[in-house]
Image 1 (cartoon, rainbow, N blue to C red):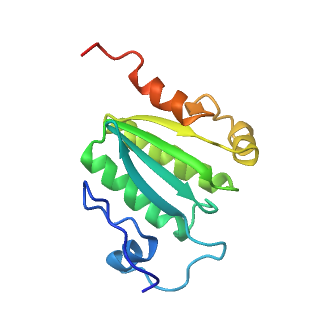
Image 2 (spheres, rainbow, N blue to C red):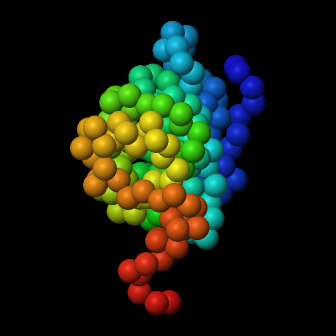
Length: 153
């Protein structure tokens, strides 16, 4: 096992890549380029996922998919994906994002993206998906946007 497990204190979801991989029985033979790491924070009713690593759509993204599946089952109403730690992705990585967006939306989640760097935004534009992703430059703008259009309490 590589390191210790990090567990979300609210949901009990395993967040550490190595722990999630071992839990699912995945073994060696990972693609080179590293593992996509996911950290979960719950802020004001919004699940914030901070993603880091190269998102290429291969087995290194299994832990990301695992967390998205968990959120889908939880029917998390608001999800903010912070991609500030994703320096690069290929078209398969974009496919992972599109798939997770579709799964979360089908579960009733409102999904927003934060901190897409120029390289990541370029691949999204090349794949003509820029209009599919609701993106924000600052966390404050993204968090505020979740409250827009909702009935007053």
